[in-house]
Amino acid sequence: MQSKSWLKAGLFAALATAAFAATPARAQGSLVMYCGVQEEWCRAMSNAFEKETGIKVAMTRKSAGEIYAQLKAESSNPRGDIWWGGTGDPHLQAAEEGLTQEYESPKNKELHPWALDQWKAAKHRSVGIYAGALGFGFNTEQIKAKGIPEPKCWADLLNAKLKDDVQVADPNSSGTAYNLLATVVQLMGEDKGFEYLKALHKNISQYTKSGAAPAKAASLGETAVGIVFIHDAVVFAVQGDPIKPVAPCEGTGYEIGSMSIVKGARNLDNAKKFYDWALTPAAQALAAPAKSYQVPSNKASPVPAQSPKMDQMKLINYDFVKYGSSAERNRLLAKWDKEVKALP
Ligand code: PLP
Image (tube, rainbow, N blue to C red; front, side, top):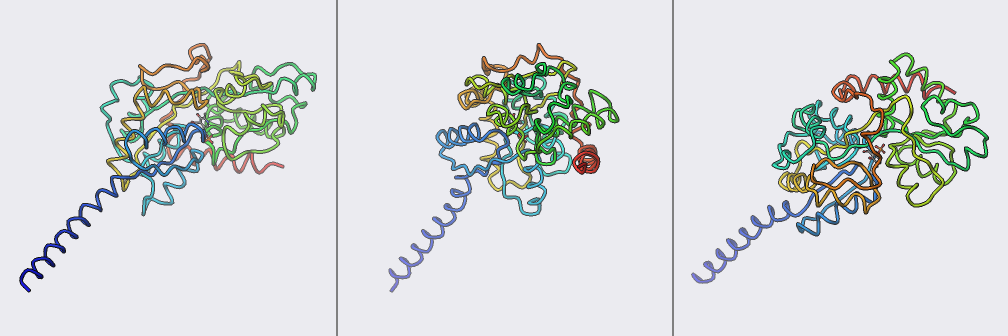
């Protein structure tokens, strides 16, 4: 009897220890990643991290505006741990709204100043992981068939012969398209910028959900022009499709692709592990083989040979603090919905 109760107590203790140990072990074993770049790069990153650490990654790819909206919707019961990739503006808005949390990675000292500028602007809640310039890609065969000069400037996209033959994403869902909206406002001034977007609307066949989709459409000849990050057009040009990437002559904006840890992340330690790893040259080198040609943020990361040469472009002095602020982003999106998208 005595020995039985000892056995029972021992068993109970063993079970309790196992249960106690099992909880943190399970919690340490996974990471929920919201990924804002192209699917192929998202998969390469989640697979490599899983392989290196044994941490199981549940990854979903979405556009930047959608991830921001998801974090907001889930804020009382956060499900994500790390938001990796996507344009910096919605990352900054999420930071301001307390949807993400502060973190200082030991890798920060290895980063380019522009990546740390994002970290400072976000009050340590987001960091730059890559940079890329905005522009467009045009289908060379379609442009030739229309008998118009090759477009080189934003102004060229208003040519009436491009009616229903330009695509760009919807800035509500897409970080790329919001980058265009903010770029045009900064480059031309708000009134002229909106006049431009209204005139451009006449040539838009559809506003896609994802920012990179118009590059694929232009490479296939489904549209004559796709407004995208230039590196998204390069992807198809290097594989021999009839698409030419353009850095617009008037000047253009750019993105600081970013990463943030979700406030209330259930797997916080793993989110930090991923964060530190994602800033290493080894992790950043996974981009080019996954056909992503952004400029990486670690100074020691190799810049892919295919990356558009940002230092040879006329880049605006993009005000990330202003255009990533909650008030400004909400205001511009509402104005675009009312004054541009609602047009026939
Ligand atoms: N594709 C690439 C290669 C990007 O660099 C980015 C932005 O960081 C995106 C797509 C953004 O996607 P979306 O405009 O759908 O938010």
